[in-house]
Length: 154
Image 1: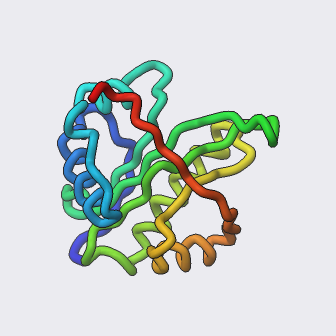
Image 2 (image 1 turned 135 degrees about the horizontal axis):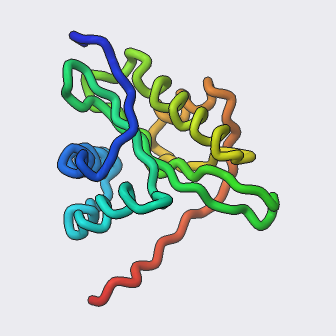
């Protein structure tokens, strides 16, 4: 690690950076990266008023080394708003320097400012490093199956 790490809110102007980091993140998790097919949608989600998507970049010497993103949602079972953390990713070579924790802190600060009762997220079952990180934060696991149904025209 060379320079100091700065965490800042991302905007539509950061589209190319978020697409690059998202592609790395998707490859790491063995997922298809769909955002590159709809870049204008990603930029719009960050710029809309109010924005349905919130994102943060971790930067060192002006270069992005990680990101986090989240959406505000409502839980019927809890009768309360929660923040759904969609992504928290730190580039290989930058892990272990507290960057994930700094991104997590930005997520927590935003969740509290947005009057959310909780933060929810998921991680692949095989990502033991992420699971260890989340347990150290005090998070608890919920055993559920996650489903996805594409509504895109085939």
